[in-house]
Length: 180
Image (cartoon, rainbow, N blue to C red):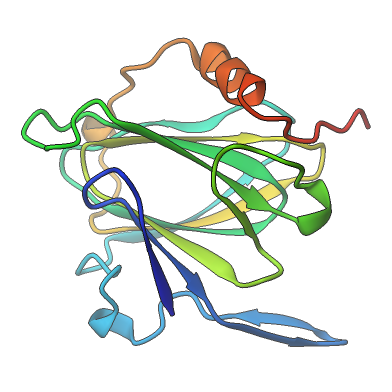
C-alpha cells in the first residue's frame, strides 16, 4: 500500500493492490483493516454511488461530524476538494485529482490515477468539501464508507457554482471529453 499525501491536512490517498485474470479483477479496499492509517475508525455506513450523466456532479458537500473513504471502481471523473476547516493550517486550500480508465486520461495538470493500476482509497476528513464530475458517458461507480450513520443535518453545501468549478478544472487541463 502506497500512501499519497495531498496539500490538504488529513486528505490522504492510497493506491491499493488488485489482482486479476481473464475472469475479472479483485480490488483490495482497506488492506490491514483497522491498522490501515486511512481507516477512520468505526464504520457507520457503506454506500454505493453511481453517476450516470456526463459532467453532472455528485457529492458537492462536506460534513462536520463524519469522515468518509471513497473507492472509485469504474468510469473516469475529476475529484475536487476544498478545506473548510477554519482551524486547519490548510483552510481554503483546494486539490483536484483525475481518477479513471487509462484510455480516458490525457495530459492534465493535476495528479492522475488509473483504476487499472490499483484502486485508489481517498480518505476525506470532516470539514473537507468533496465533489466529483464524471467526464464520459460511461457510468462512474463509487463505494463510500462513512464513520457515522447517515444524518441529513450533517451535510453542508457551501459552493453553489459547481459548473464553474468543472469549467475551471477542464480549462486548466485537457481532460478527454467523449461525445457519445
